[in-house]
Image (tube, rainbow, N blue to C red; front, side):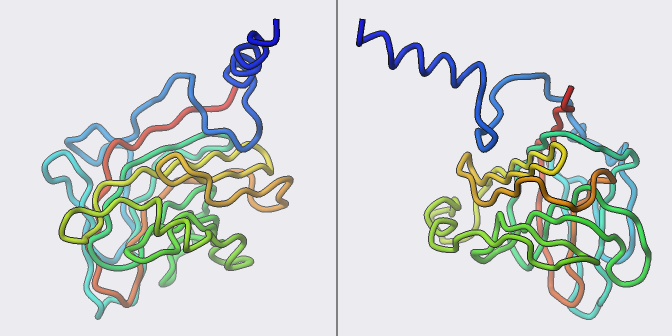
Length: 211
């Protein structure tokens, strides 16, 4: 009888994952078709284009504006996942944002995506700034690099359901907020940070809408 307990417990976790568990089931809807930027619009500066099945963003240090690629639709409760490769600079995956103009372009949450070790932290543009920082020692362990030491393809997953927000890097939880009083809905967006030489790639951008 005791040998059945671990199996039963594993089945329970699969059917009823905890609030910090990485989502495993459900229908994923692509937000990027691999060929065009249909369903998205840009906020200057920088440049966004599609090359070899990936979204490629570039900008020059001389441009102070945050270049943004923004979804046409808005979302409330969801889980989103995407693959990224940052070759230069500080990028991010925005969610629950409003378009506000100016140099920053949007206000709202950002899951940090960069070429250093703060990837997976949560920052609120136009609000509280850093809300939760990722442990840099863990990020160093979890981030994937190629054999030349440059960043390889990595996966970011963000779950936002009510005030509960969790971020994972390559399946490892980096930060979690519970009953957060912040923004409840808005656009998704990819960022090119102003005032930096930027070169970032994204692909396999998908969303799962919470029921």
